[in-house]
Length: 249
Ligand code: ADP
Ligand code: MG
Image (cartoon, rainbow, N blue to C red; front, side):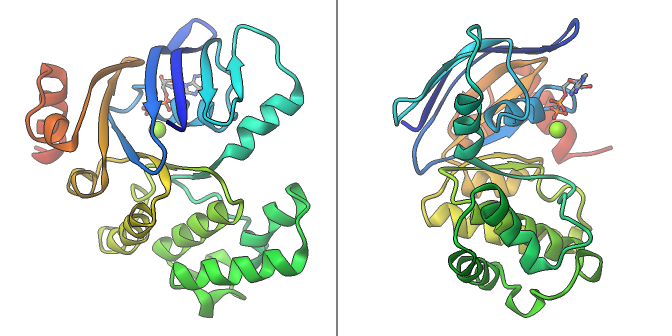
């Protein structure tokens, strides 16, 4: 197991966004999160990436790192958490004034202080992998949304994370550009990356997931194989949610 999450809770002032999340993330497996807007999906990913500080809960990683959020932790411990994962955002979040290549190399060189030549070599390989080697000197505004999101994926991979987090990676894209991004993510799944993916693409979730969770109101309502959760959900809330997104009025 890569990570065990016990009793995770997060509030913003009085708003309880994550209430009692218990979850295991298996090494080399793809976990998909579905659920209505406002259910806490993004907040959960942000807690995994140390972008939010949980109020309660315990993370236990396979390398021995344990974080109990009721205790005060050192900056170094938070940094360890941050470095475990790479995040791909819904809105790409690329640096607009940097080229494609610079977007991919910036984090590894500036934040991780890695060797420039090594990073550049790695970045070029990653851009090749996402099909953008010939675009490396262009700027984000010169690319389509699908291309920008593939840069976003290469940028996260360049940090050599143990875990890849995807927050609705295709929901800002025109429908005809969704496939090119999903196929890159499928390739990563086949390569054995450990991934957590928030998505509304149910067909894709069926194909790529080892496990699916349905969240609502800050809780995990249902959890199981893609077959169990997406095809024959037991909980009424899951059934209603799937009805709504599979048959929009
Ligand atoms: P989802 O990704 O499932 O749509 P989010 O995790 O983004 O849900 O948000 C869950 C709830 O937390 C929402 O009600 C949202 O408005 C609230 N929320 C998220 N981030 C913040 C924040 N930084 N400050 C206050 N409220 C927030
Ligand atoms: Mg969200």
